[in-house]
Length: 191
Image (cartoon, rainbow, N blue to C red):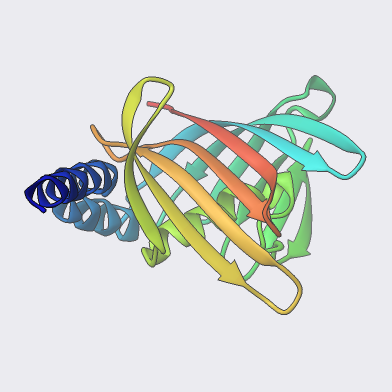
């Protein structure tokens, strides 16, 4: 009886250690959520890969987030469309190229297109209502993995973002629709 009790205690301690090592520190998560809800002006280089049913495309974008002004996105690559820029506000988006401006209305907030992925992710981050928060690492860097799920009448969306534990900057993000990864983003903070 004692042997079973000791084994059960050891097993319980092992599971407790495993689960506590995966769970994120609640104080740090609260600080991260507060940081995301109150983002100042941020600039990132984002490398986006979008997977469509019959093809995969990659883009590199400069993204400037501003709480006071419209967000601004400029395509860096592929070269064929480099220089195309657009601004994004909650109510409207405007496409710009070579001095011409085209008002496009609001972007798709589901995050299903490469151009709406970054604004959709930032909207999710600023909401701060994550379903899961885990300690993790990405490419050898200590990170918090924040997972947000949203379901509409057609699909279930899942947004996963890895944030640096050092400065809370986004490192990598994925968007899933119906359990399938359709968008992935690698971030570099620009100074």
